[in-house]
Image (tube, rainbow, N blue to C red; front, side):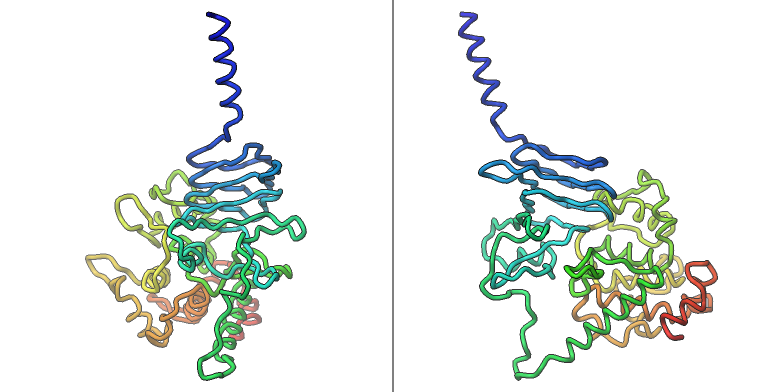
Length: 356
């Protein structure tokens, strides 16, 4: 009888060891790691700066990393290996460039994961990216016969040069802000240049981080205690920034202990910028209401009109940031002059980059 039980127990252990291991919850890799199970499932995953996460290949199936909510690869961290990253609906990915293939040609994915899911008819579609060892990139499993992300030509047969000119203008501004230390990209393009992801909408978290950089406070914010962040939905990579934004009154969240990790609206971003310029939404003596922040922004010349906000992207944000730099604070003096006085950059550097 004991022998039968022992055999049954051994068989059960053998079966359990053959079952793919699943992990739930959050994970942060703080040292070089190789995943060895068939699939690992996480809510929020972070690859720290200077750390390499390698996904070991299993024959015939590759290692899988399934992300339910968010994946963040900090600057200097990376993911390599013959693996597969699977995203659930609603998941986000920052710090890792994702690619797709159209007509056999590999290109940088220009849309967010949420936008990607919207283009798929299947209700249970999960974006899946496979590692391409020839390029070192994670590439969308689908290989499109024609490019679904290309901007269509105008219906009247025009050249579309207006849109191209606007994109060039936004890129030029982003590069100027980068030179002043006020802007960072969302990764690197295939040619090694900074990918500012100007054609996609910013998340609320990205909007706050953009604002902190505009104020030249990134170093100060990064030194903040992440435990002071009051928002339960804050991604690990931005807890310091959100703690700083909350403590300094730049961002208050959406109530109920939530910051809100969805896409930012133009009014929300403008609210952040106007607060940085000294204007308040305090109930006792408000300068503006966040729902109509575009009205004050228009009056101040930060935006020309509602048309500036119809297609709200990170490109829109850099235009607003540039206008804010040149604009007067509520207390007097221009924002760029305050930053120069704070030592973020010198007056000579500003004038050399921005022209005035």
